[in-house]
Image (cartoon, rainbow, N blue to C red; front, side):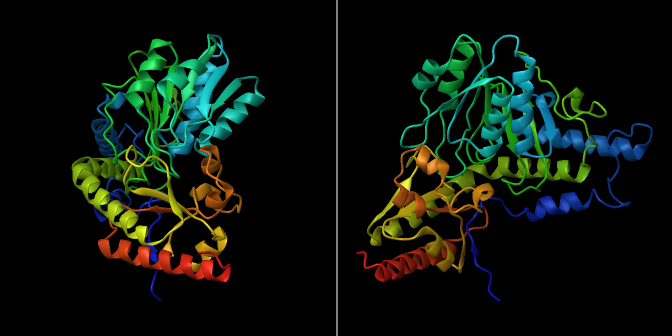
Length: 387
């Protein structure tokens, strides 16, 4: 059986072989398998050293202090810790939070939870490209605002916020700025030493690392405090209790180290493949690209087609592994709330495909995808007498 071409890198990436090798060295008795908190013997010391080396790899990619990296089980937990932890700690200053209506569900659901606890949340509507401007953000901040949470890169359309301009607003207004960077790390340069970001959520499995591990950047100067959401042992300087999974953290560290070395090369290659995909679709009438054309990551392309039922299109593309939007929303047949949030019509939102490419995508994969999409869209339109 021939497997379909994998074009769903925004949902998850395969673990890089070099990452898998490093992880395998931290699993069995002959490797560095111990509990990093076991400081009474050499096994624990070795594990702790590996974990701290991994922490430094993550920090180096972001240009921050390793002490500002707090390990979590993934970006979802990091989002929860950042938003709930900050809201609870600073609730005496105010109870207003600003976010957007197209954030990841980990952010939106955390905000909904806080609303049930008496917090007031403003959900900003982005422009047609999926972006919030500095002026729009400035207007939304009130005297009782304590936190702004906006993602760097949208997971469905790939549009990228200008973090420098947004961070300048939040710092000037004395408000904490949280950024979900799960989709941007390793794809766009991030320099936390030169950007006014207070909290940043990170994930390993979006950059060829393992699932089940991530981190939260928590700025030390100016100091940011959080109320822990996980209790039991006081690990990670009291912010996140739980035995550290040495092999997972080593995998994340190695993935971040590798992507730091390859980011320039990969960006150029993915930009070329993106152009090939979009230029080749020009042979087909009645389609549109969702999201900003240039202020984006090259690996995420969201395209909609007129005159086509989305479910039928997705089911017909058996030779491709693509999605209709975010992986966490793939069970619903409703049009994407992200596309609706940027004003895409129901016709195009219902038929949208997210094609996301990455490290192991080839030119042949793109050519296969374009042929399959064009042929299937044409066939489905014949059935409905469109075009």
